[in-house]
Length: 430
Image (spheres, helix red, strand yellow):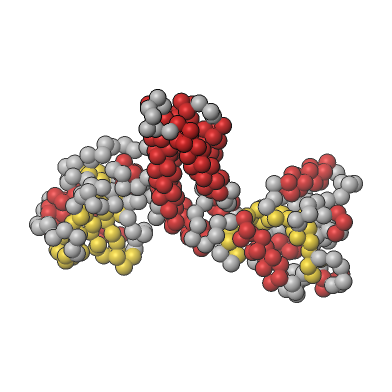
């Protein structure tokens, strides 16, 4: 971020021109003055008004557009804002941006600066910001739903509930400490109540940690196609992703290294990986390395499609695929599939979807990123430590540390470098 919050910033917040309509967004103390300069008037708050906009330098007409005046703090950034809804041609946008840039005190916004201001003014917390970032990058419906839930503050409201429970527990611990010698404060009763409430909080936090992670949702469910040479792995991969991503050959050992292909199927993001054929007598050193990499990939796989013999399955939860069923017959163990004829492909995709859905957030749920999961895990550790303490003084300290983890979750205690990295990933105008 290059400028202080008191600067007035502007940017194109709609898609790149040309377009039917373009939206220019202005935020800062001079937002109203900028509109008044261009339109020679300020419309009523939060009411769209048609106006002829003129260049303040020479009075030349720029465009006839809708203008909106949005006084703060009840705006997305928490400060005065204005919007210009103009025609979406490149020349129109360039002329309006040039006029705004020439006004004293106005400058073009940095990437993510509008959202940064919303965060700085308390209009969004860090979790909502991360959800918005995911929403902008969403490519599947599952990603969109989970990101929208996070951006709309569902996780933040859960954090608020945890905070209220921690504050109540802290108050009880302080009461036990400050008034332990008073007859009207039953020490044992308070300590028992603290223990009961800590147990309930630990259960709630534990359920959050047990939920699917955002990384799998964002990066895709990792599906490994494995088996001996010439089992039909590459052909099946191409059929699954709908293009010739892997080389298909009857020559054993054609696939020497892992081939990763991302694909979205039925609203779920996958990363399909074709691997070298598994055999003990590798043809050369390069193939041996490929086989080692294939085994490593299987260890990290979310789902394995095994195209080999049933008694050689690498994991009990692998999906046994009787590939090349059109050529090798349908009486073998496993799901009969032919990538050439399409037989069994619908059943295979259904099995994949069922497995993948169990690894992803349910519809309407959100998922935690690595940063969030680490902090929630630390929060859980403090709750566990508090439950194991017998001295109320140590319990109170663990509760204080737990509350500090919540501050880090919401961004109330975050490093500037982390924030700069997060907001730099946003587009200009967001």
